[in-house]
Amino acid sequence: VTIGTQAARALARSDYRGPVLHTLIPRRSFDEFNVGARGQVSAIFIDQPTERQIALIRQALPDWRRVALLSGPSSGELTQQLASTAREQRLTPYIERADSDEGLHAALQKLLVEPAVLIATPDPEVFNSYTIQNILLTAYRQRSPVIGFSPAYVRAGAIIAIYSTPRQIGTHAAEILSAQLAGAGLPAPQSCRYFEVSINQHVARSLGIALDDADRIRDRIIAATGAGR
Image 1 (cartoon, rainbow, N blue to C red):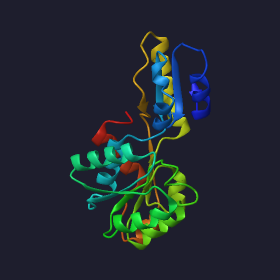
Image 2 (tube, rainbow, N blue to C red; image 1 turned 90 degrees about the vertical axis):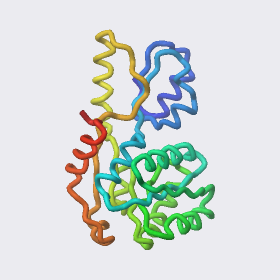
Image 3 (tube, rainbow, N blue to C red; image 1 turned 60 degrees about the horizontal axis):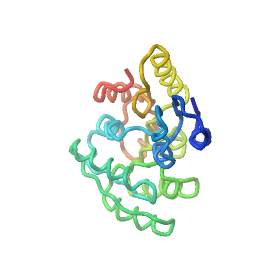
């Protein structure tokens, strides 16, 4: 069992060929060093599945139909998947490419010419410590709520975030290992079964948005997607 990208990469470069379960690893990192080609390998990704992210919009912000997506150097495939899932749920996605800090503001202005739900993605070249405050401020001025992927985003000004905690990922890993030790094979790489929702009521009220309790929103997502059971 590895914890984090550095440990997963080190093991992928080693000669070890036994069963492996990677945890707390982004999907893109798993794909980049192709650990899946080394035998019986699985992972619990830190990323949330696109279905769960779109379900968050449907359950927490049911009156919103426009979804804004910033596509960067390492998130092109993810934004396309989010857009496809949004369409399946009768939402209207809009995508703008932002390959540099200089193009970020222009892309945001195009995306949010009308208020929309902006989904932050774990693309370090778009959403990082240098850009996030400007992104949040621009979205706020455009009356557009931001969905984050960690509690830090909610503290910074995102209206809501959906994420799995290290403890939840550890619980899921223990369940997989218990089944594996009992004779089951490792499952396919997947997102964590368990997740949390955090909200920023202050920002929501400032935008004139009524948000339900975070736990109730999470429970509705579980009912809609079957996750977390």
